[in-house]
Length: 143
Length: 104
Image 1 (spheres, rainbow over the protein chains, first blue to last red):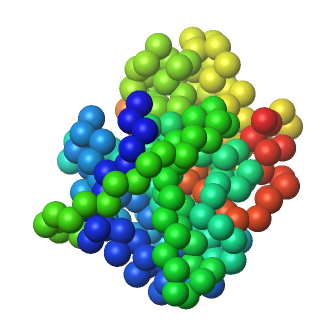
Image 2: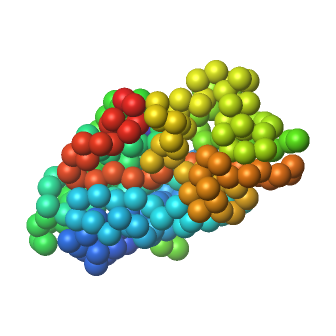
């Protein structure tokens, strides 16, 4: 399992744009990538059906549609991201208990400080959280 | 009666790594019982000890969320396709019920 998330700056910017736009509600989404590549390339902002400042949940029908689309494209959810809007970018107990995609990088951002972009990435497998390095690269992608 | 079931990564430890398994049953409950007989422990990841569908598991019959089709009582027909997805959810504050709901 990789201990580094390599991600394009344009995608990081898109995640923050989404999170800042939905602040103070939590924002969530997926970055899909070719199966087996571990490369997040396709930015997919999702609705937070909970519309809450302390909770997020993908809308069940959008979830099905996007997961089917990834299947059809031979893609995987490489990154699953969400924002915390008043606390640090670290998985809460809820995040850990509900993490159901052991192959994904769980990206947490915080929008608690309008001037500071907090971006961290974790593996969450069987209730165990492991923070990993984030390598933000500049490349041209269709984010 | 053959029903195709798409299994999410997190539950493939019960299916020997298979992404798609086949089951039988004329309701979702019957199908899950059939799957549990073939893949021991499967049911416990979908159904609470009280006998309800886990809040943070989504099950779809073809293109519909079973919550709109009668949940565990939903009727199944030969050739239906079932998709199981763990809900993608979480959030900043302790959601006390989550751990209990998940039985962890």
